[in-house]
Length: 86
Image 1: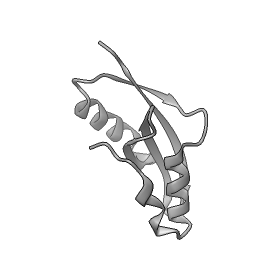
Image 2: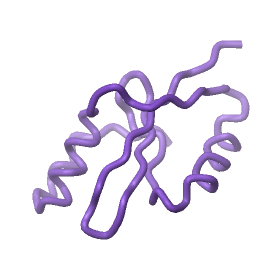
Image 3: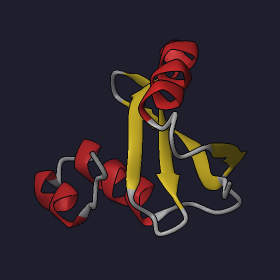
Image 4: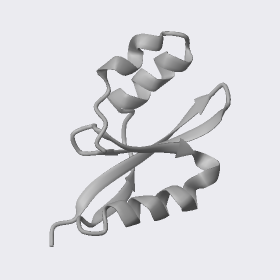
């Protein structure tokens, strides 16, 4: 069975550190507070139980992270360009 690679990266926001999970196409798979790592990974495992995935630290800053940082910098329409997989 094919394992889908997801990458994660951290971003500092005015209200705390978030952890962003995205796929190889840059689509957001999950976004949560870093303090909830265990819960988020448990929910990802439950949601993708029929489509196994692996987690890897991002090697470069994603488009999604840059958009979210712009959002927290006051550019509220920056998230309009994000693709989210439900």
